[in-house]
Image (tube, rainbow, N blue to C red; front, top):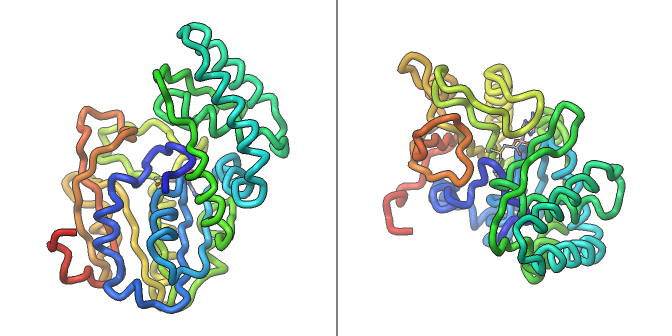
Length: 303
Ligand SMILES: C[S@@+](CC[C@H](N)C(=O)[O-])C[C@H]1O[C@@H](n2cnc3c(N)ncnc32)[C@H](O)[C@@H]1O
């Protein structure tokens, strides 16, 4: 199962490492609830839903309204999205001339920006633009208009029909929210709840300037600290939590080791990123995976 959008910070390449660090008995939990407050493209969500039938309830959230509207529409209104998406794809892919394709893309982008949020076709345009724009980025200008340039891919896979229907089925047990992570987390929490948190990356170090990939407001250290406080509350309620972020340092002091020093487990893993969130030449930075439970003993076994 593949996510329906490419997303900055997407976790497809980290799935193996995440899977190895799930609570050891996770597949034996009865009626597990899976929560993802920064769901983005949903690579971890869809992996978990496909693999673990014992997840009977899932709750997802992201601050991006266009993205969360797409999840809702794929859940409730799939045929309509598919019809428009197919015609956009067929028309775009039938154009062989580069300039004409580019023109088609910019026209579609203009149409998308002119659409009202409730417009039924907006989600199809969003998915189409995501797969044909530069690097699958989602970025808006000061007027809230999507402004990512054309991606010039020879044969982009805009969607796969079977995959689309599988996503639709999976989403039937998912509650979809849009807002700040603090809001949704208020309503969740019991002992058979697993929460995977993938907040925006903290820059690797203070010297490296991050360009804003996620939303206009940015995600600050105060938000990372606020998130940690929420993790403590859920830990006390018996939830199992996993959080990933960049392995970030201030003057050689690990930001996350410092922040999560009260009994959390911290592992480091190497990742290759499709979309580099740092304005940096270091294309293989490490990532931290933080859990509030001990990492299973078989972590080094062949997965
Ligand atoms: C690293 S990405 C998650 C990527 C996701 N795991 C995937 O596989 O595609 C972080 C996400 O957090 C969202 N975000 C940023 N600030 C937020 C906030 N205050 N509350 C909830 N979501 C937020 C962004 O819109 C973005 O989609």
